[in-house]
Image (cartoon, rainbow over all chains, first blue to last red; front, side, top):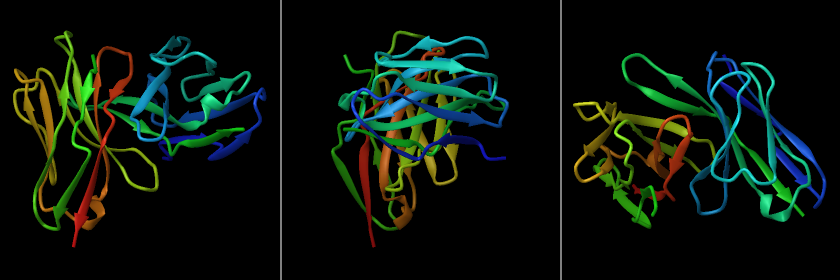
Length: 115
Length: 113
């Protein structure tokens, strides 16, 4: 049981290059999320997927696209990277636990630098 | 207006003492959830505690407790018996519907031996 996994851990891109960040969870969760964290800031929601086959924009979606490939996998794509997208990217999935307990489990993060 | 406000720039606590980290929130949704996460220097996000808006009692998880004052819209984290490993950044966050979590800017906690 690996929880939430992300690849790659680190990436350096040149402005205008594209790449896809991969995320997978093995906890059978319906909802998955992509966040970015900039220095000295909390996390901000980019996109989310409430269930397989659906995706919606979060607070900062510009410059990104997502794909919910199946229940396990939720990928984030940068079509034309810009220096403003230099950040740490976190994927998360949501668990509604026994009683009213609710949480999101986060992956280890991808540190992306755009030159 | 900010949805989650964490105004303490940095906190220091002596090992084995208790510390309170402040968080205020703003929402008009009657159903919401409040979370605290820990982010050590290694960067991962570690879930600590959750409080639902309809929960009657304050949440507790081991050394962590959440002081939930609904009328004041505050959700302070209390860490009892601080340990050196508690030194980290702490984030308060709120969930409204499926829109993911809204995070505060975080508080740095340093535990002194």
